[in-house]
Image (tube, rainbow, N blue to C red):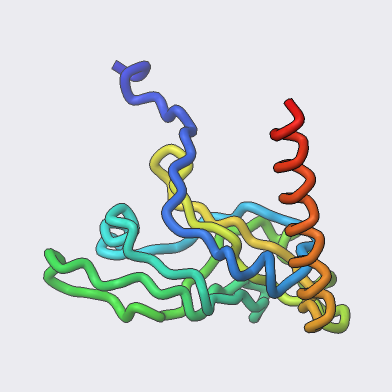
Length: 157
């Protein structure tokens, strides 16, 4: 009976913050759990979440995720506020390490992706530094050059 209920650890992505990789330079990544209400979990399973404006802050020894939009679940009797602050589940030493990193000038915590790992909702968090406009241009130019090289190699073979 227990073997039937075993958690496979399969990862199913719900939402990704594609803009984050363009707007920020990723320094380090970290996986965290999220404290959610039941209607929020059901809404996430329907892929009704948006990470585009979300960010995380360290407050009172806790990491709080702000501006993550999870649409209300239509079948719920008592719904949640779509943009309510949600606590991230991390160990104390991880929180202390994050706090030390983001105290440096220009660093921030941003979510990269929201996914289910088995039955548990997780979020991939990144410590990132904001890019300047010229850095963004360089990143675009590099990506285009890489694409041209790949195309040329494909044609040769």
